[in-house]
Image (cartoon, rainbow, N blue to C red; front, side, top):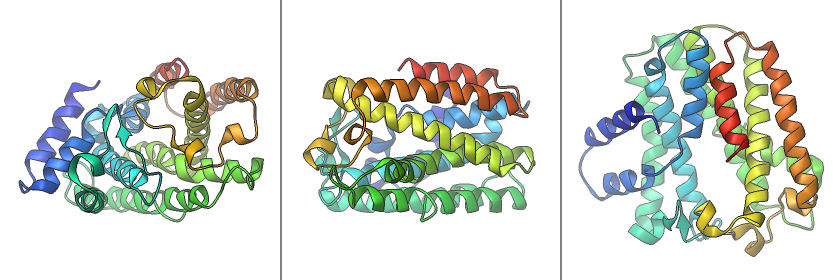
Length: 276
């Protein structure tokens, strides 16, 4: 866990008006693995910057990630009672508070960037554009739509990739684009491709873990089976899926050979992802 970034999150929370919503925000933000911020920090350090320059952008992305989990868990979505090994937000604070908390987290992500003293106007616009694009209909929201309208009976490899590349890959694309904007370079196709690859691996692992790990180990409910969701295991056996994950890690290693930053930090992070 990055203690300096955690302090940054705490400082942000204490700056907000004290009320039930901010109590719920603190509850929802607690215990996250911060994997998307860690990708940002790894690439930024590989570019030669101190990671602290990315704290506001990483915070904004973590706010959006947390909002998405809150709304995913709601009864109208996945109807999950557990997140990170404890009651989901709507169970701990009521459903109406959970909806408002998710709304606040999403809304405030853009204020964090617009009021940041770490970025110039051009960088702010680029980060806000990436957040709104890939957390929206060009990414996560569209992927969630595909996810809730797909089931075991109508999913194939193309649909699976489309769900993964949008629902999960969307925020990973942002993780990879943010350092590019901070460093002021233009190679968006490479960085969105990197985010897409990481997102595929991450989602395939999650699908596999839902089968081979207990709810205590994953910290969340196995709702995909209950909801008849279409996942990678709707198409592949566990053995086939593990082989695909191994091949995707090899593809990622090859992809990083074309990076224009030192990949040592992200390589270490991806090793932790492989062994999680």
